Structure formats: C-alpha cells, structure tokens
Image (cartoon, rainbow, N blue to C red; front, side):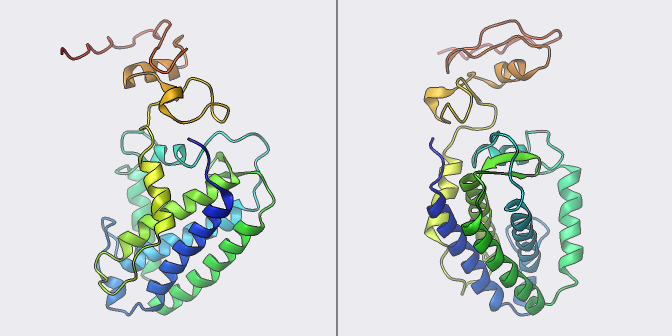
Length: 252
C-alpha cells in the first residue's frame, strides 16, 4: 500500500467538510435531535464531535513530528478497534465517558450556533491543511506523514457524514473521494498484522505482512519474546515465558 496523494487528500477533506456544512446549515431544533448511527448520539452530537476533530486538526497542523512517522492512515484506526485493549477503544469505559461528554456539551448549543462554529473552524482546518509546511505531524501521541493525517480527517468526516444523515432524507449524497479513502482503509489487513520490512520502507500489503495469526503476533510483540517474522507467512523464535499453546490449524 502506498500512502495517499496529499493534494487528493486535501481535496477529499474539503469536499467531506463541505457536505457536513451543507447539512449543518439546514438543521432545525427538531432535525438536530434526529437519531444518528452513533449509539446514544443525535445529529447535533455528531456535529459537535466533528467540530472537536477540526479543532484537533488545527493543533496538529502546527505540531511537526521531531522524528520519522510511526503510523499511517490505515494503522491509525487500529487502537480504536474493540479488540485492541486501548483505553479509547470502542466499548471501553473511556469511550463511554467521551460519548457522555459530547452529549452534555452539544446540548448547550443551538443548531445555528454549532453550525456557525463548525463552518468557521472547518474552513480554517482546510486552509491549514493546504498551507502546512511539515512532512510529518504529531497527533494523539503518534507521528503520521502529513498526507496520511489529512486522509484520516477525510475518512472520519466521510463516516460521520453517513452517521449524521441516516434519518435526514433530504441530505445530499456523500462525497465520493472521501468514501474512496474509507474503502482503502477497510480493504487493508486487520489489526495484528506486522510488517516484515518495517513501515515506511516496507509497504502495508500481503507481500510484507505477517505473522499468520494473532498468537504469533502477540508473541512477537511481547517484551520477553524472541519471535521474529523473517517472511510474511512465517514466525520464528521462542515464545515468552507463560505463553499459551499455539492454536492447532483446522483440518482440511
């Protein structure tokens, strides 16, 4: 997998934010309280969450990474998987606290006030994306190439646009370029795959990913483990003390 084209990612972000702005401008007190696809959130809650993401973008575009990137626009999403064990993973207590925070703060806004702040902030984020001079950026403790970071913003905006508009029948069609980025992320190998040649020198594709199962992945990552992945389909070395018995392959 090659990284996203920066100009294309910038355009996808601009188009995705524009779609959200169109919907936000037409919200009424009634439509703002329509349900979204996000559990426990109404349309206005999702819009506030997107406002927070645009604010984070402004901070990130002024936060150059002091070292090389350690995350790309696909691996960025893996800590949020329910199986990751990350404090912010879907279904965690941290995620529940954040969801409650969003509901409380969003309820203080009128639809018009939140729309105005979203439009102003999202426009500034787009300008900052196009003007950012840095090759890599820091966000949430991870370093990403600037094009990859912009792509994550576009992916999140595309998904939450669909979340916002599930009950809004008059909403415009979603932006195709940002949806294409979503498909690229979903088409990549799942969490638990390691790069044989470390990224970014090694691509995120089947030709460079292993070990073959979660057991070997965990042994490779364990601090006391001695496993390596010399080729995409192999895992050599000694598992750490106390490691479980490896799974038996299914019979054919």
